[in-house]
Image 1 (tube, rainbow, N blue to C red):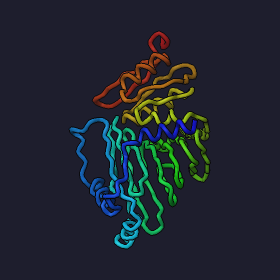
Image 2 (cartoon, rainbow, N blue to C red):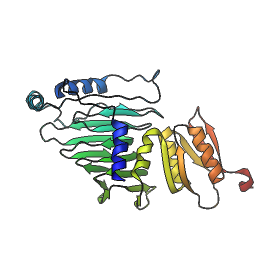
Image 3 (tube, rainbow, N blue to C red):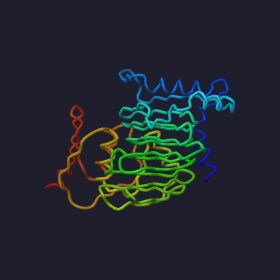
Image 4 (cartoon, rainbow, N blue to C red):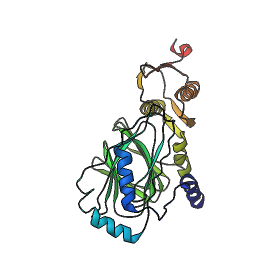
Length: 290
């Protein structure tokens, strides 16, 4: 299974390369310009792929330390990389770590050139494939994830819903003075102030999220809809409906209306969607409500 997983990761990232013709100095300059340039999404496709290539010459690395001493060591983060709804953006950091930013998310980074520590600020959902090296920390509202070199996924639109999945290696999740260690195939979620729940999942199912395909196993429908609301930036309102409703199965979340149709059929619900106001009203089906 591990061999298949590594093959899957290689397939997803095979279009990346590290040509020796571009030094780390050039990579830093190109990345800074990329993040500081004003973003215009009016004519962008929904799925955008960006690749920045970093050289690996040891001599260039030594030169870079001398040239950039004191820079990127001020505690300041880069300007944010932002994705729109149903947009996926890929970014290779100067340390060769890969970040895949999912729908309606933003990320900022800081690289300490002296200590080698790497820090990321995340709001939303992102997949990380971290290059071996010094400590790599992802901070978000409600906690942080710390690793050295591994692959993992984080959902952190806000403190009310947090989800972490370890795809390879190990990750340490810190949540308000509570620490959790996740190994390959383990997930951790927190919803609506309830106690954290640890579960097992096939890592391939997490990787599929980069293509918009999400798998759920007996997830309460309120939790599922909360995540969908954050992913698509819609506000949800509920009427009261009877009984506990848990959803299991895969949903393609690249299209909001199709996803809601699947949930409505499976959970005996009906949705009133106002795309202009970006609201979703959740009701029981009329036959049940009567």
